[in-house]
Length: 266
Image 1 (cartoon, rainbow, N blue to C red):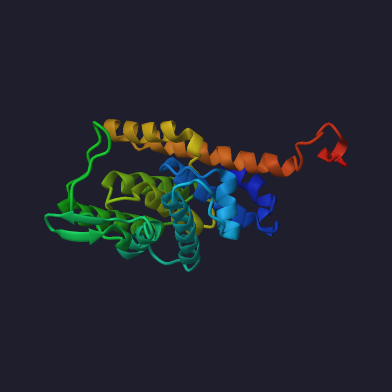
Image 2 (image 1 turned 90 degrees about the vertical axis):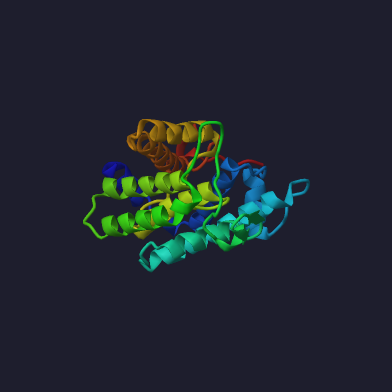
């Protein structure tokens, strides 16, 4: 991993105009695609760059993408200040994720707006065999996770330990499922927060690998071994870095047999 990161960092991709923005757009595309957004990669780029809503697409998909992008920008900004992770920070991330798609939830304990980043006051399931902690344990468990993360981040961690900590935060927040909706996006953004905090490239869960992603979460939960999720995420991380390195080293895929990989077209 150290060797791969050194190779990636030597490319100095941040010096490329708009590289960072296009990278963030790609992250928003994949994260929302996993959650059911129907926007294509190009539609996502046009929406976020030009504010043009794609025709024939559900307005909620548009909101999902634009809200995620703003939440991602918030994460990058906060991480740059080295702010400690807190329950409030996680709630703010979720609030931004759900800003325009959150619903009013009327439950026994009252009426709650999902766009407020409120911790759930109701029980939830996902699929036949997936059950999350009871609502009365959510605040305690989330605060406990925050305390563990803050404590570990004060230590002198190796690069691999930093990455594993970000992956662990991702899995554990998903496992708690503290919000009514947006838990997957919020958990991936928490992972990105830790990576940005340490100045590491940000991980992307490729939407094409959604099935394997979900399976890694199931395997980790059923077998009580975080290594299943770590292995999946490390594979995604390496895949992304290698793709970026390869793309940089081959600036054109047109007539790459020509020296330099470039050929004029008229």
